Image 1 (cartoon, rainbow, N blue to C red):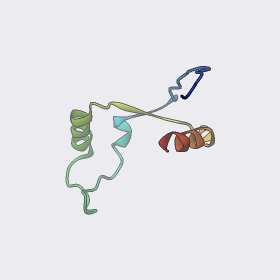
Image 2: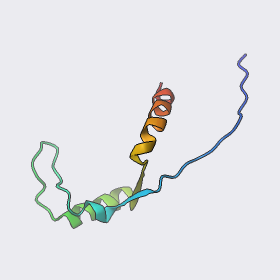
Image 3: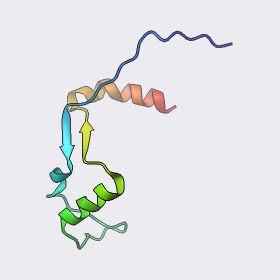
Length: 76
């Protein structure tokens, strides 16, 4: 029998916020590497329609060395 004790829980919401509009200057490609022949606004709006994701949260670079080992452990 396995015995476990949960000593605490928590969560973290990164402060670095990337909104869909931040992708307006990006270049989008099709599966085979050909540049999409559509305006970026149209591509971004379609992504929003499909995923309902309006913004993403990214960990700050200085925190990655703390988070990465934990993620590697969780994936196993």
